[in-house]
Image (cartoon, rainbow, N blue to C red; front, side):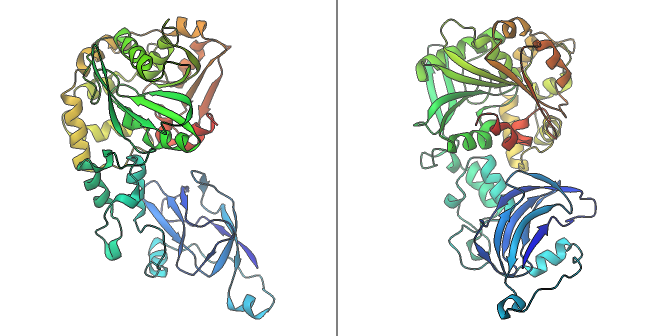
Length: 420
């Protein structure tokens, strides 16, 4: 008999969840207790096990889908004793939603399989850092990879080694007369190059999950650390410094036509870069770009420019996204140390003064009509989405619900769909 699996309530306050990943495909069989899908709640990632033997028939909520408690996840054929004996199945009242404790109790030890054993949190951290989970030594039971294993792997620099697959965060360097630009590249052999420009206080690593997805679609993706950011050694005190450095970077690595995608400060850089006489650009996608209005969360900018401890940085990350990456205290401290040792303060003073933005890209967008679009998260707490009205009526705007200032973190699947 074909039955429907719905999303159970996995916590007292849970109202919805997000499909983190399916472990079974339609047509594949599973046994009772075997994990078939991972569900991300507002607090953790839960492995949802099968409560009976069966065969997956149809997935109704794909990877990344947000669904409410009680809504359908999939359809499956049961393989119980009644079906095996040919006895007609009878309708039974739906069972109450299992609690997390019941789900854990129902799951036996992991069966032997070719799939790499890893906890959901370990997989999530690996995806966010562009690490191939298969390369991480596991310290758990039966060599299962734990979250701490992945964090140690990344902290030791293993995640940046040349042995990481092309979709991973390979850290490279481009030497220019003004200094060195650090960058990451996904799928160097891909077509239709896309340049990703991060926001204030970020670096190329903020694009990892999103960029890896585009690379799997065949795109070549480049993401530099902007001047005054990350591992790039070039200083910058204003927008034009950033534009000139990225223009020189493109001339060296992607001199032909390139598609641009910029986020926040990177959006302002992309808009100005598209009008640079030495740069050949195609379509532009600007995500919550700076420069369309004066309002901004100036405290966030100041906090990023003066970050000194991981705890303070964690608070800032919660402002920038509804679902910030799961980072350990050690990773947060390392990020804060990098921010604190950079020259972001001078750049911040130029970009924001008196609590107001000092950058204006409305003239740039007027000259780019026909090949530029805006994307904005409706939960943006850094730059209000209402500033999109200043872009001009001829420029399309895509609003993404349940996303903050960084849709590439909150809704990467919906954002990637715009580039298909």
